[in-house]
Amino acid sequence: MLDAEGIPYVSVQGRCKELGSFKEKIQRKRYKDPKREITDLAGLRIITLVESDIQRVESVLRDAFDVNDENSGDKSIALGDDKFGYRSVHFVCGLGGRRESLPEHGRFKGLLFEIQVRTALQHAWAEIEHDRGYKLKGELPSHLKRRFALLAGLLELADSQFDQLSNDIDRYQADVSRRAVSGDLDIEINSSSVYELLVLKFGKGVNSAYDDAWPQLIQEIRDFGAYDLKSLSQLFSDDVCRRARESTPGLEVPGLIRDGLILTDIERYFKKSWKGHWSGLDFKSAITYEEHYGKDLSEVWEKHKIDLYNEDEDADFFVGEGD
Image 1: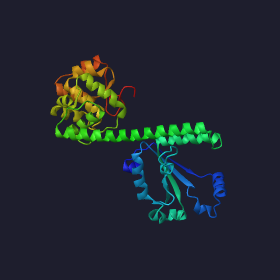
Image 2: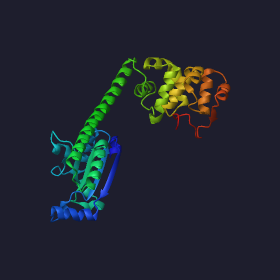
Image 3: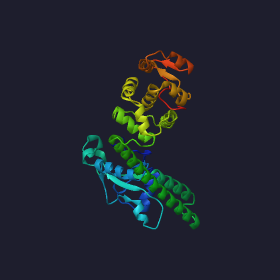
Image 4: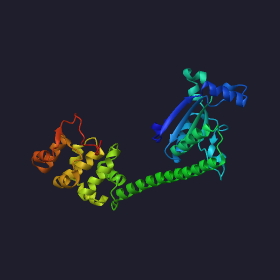
C-alpha cells in the first residue's frame, strides 16, 4: 500500500509475539481474556525517512483498517513539552469490515494488531536505548539516563531539520519547474534543475531512474561549459533534441544528456567531458551521430577505444563511473 501511494520508507518489519512474551504480559497485566485484550499479538513496524511521511502513512492505515483510537496514540505527546525519549506513533487496528468479510479472514474477526510508525532516527534511538537499558535490567544510572535524554533531544532536532530540508527540496523543485516552464532559465546546474529542463524538452516520460549517475553527468555538463539552464538549453536545439530522442527512445537521463552534448559538439565532448567515463556505444546511437554530422565517425570511436555493440547486449554507456 505504501508503494502504491508513492510513500518512501526504510523498511516494513513484522513479527508475532513469542509465547514467552505472551505469557509474561498475561501475568503482568492480569488479563482475563488475553486473546482479546492483548492488542499486539501481531505487529508491524514501519520506518519512514522523515516525520512528515508519518502523516501520509497514517492516512493509508486509516483508509485500509479500522483504527482503534482509544488504544492508539503518539508516544511523543506522553513525553510532554520538557522531556525527550521514546518517540513513535502506535496504531491499534482491526482488519475492518471489508477484509473480515472475506472467508479466509473470518477467523481474525474482532482481533487487533499493532502498527508502529517511526522515523529512522527515532528507530535508531529506540533500538540503542532498548539494548543498553536491557543490559541493566531496564534501569540506568541517573547520569546515563540524562545522556540518553540529551541524545534523544539531539536526534529529535535532527529529525525536524531533515523533515524541513526534505520539504525545502520539494519546494525548490516545484519552483525550478515553474521557472523553467515560464522561460526563466537563470538557474544553476544541478540534478533537479537539469531534470526539469529535460522534462521541458522531452516531456514527462523522462526516465530518472539513474540516481547514481547524476554526479558524473552534472560534472560532464559543467566540463562541457554549461553552468546554468539557460546555456544548457541553448545547446539542446530542436534538431539536437530530435536526434537525442531517436538515439534514446527510452528517454533515460544519462543517454539524453550525453546524446545532447555529443550531438552539440562531439570534439568538445570527448576533449572536455568524456574523460573515459564510459566505453560502450550502441550501433543505433553511433548511426544517429554519423547522420547528424554527415560523416563517418569510426576514427573517433577508435581513438577513444569506444566499443560498438548491438542494443541487446550489455554495456556501460548509460551508467556513471564505478557502476
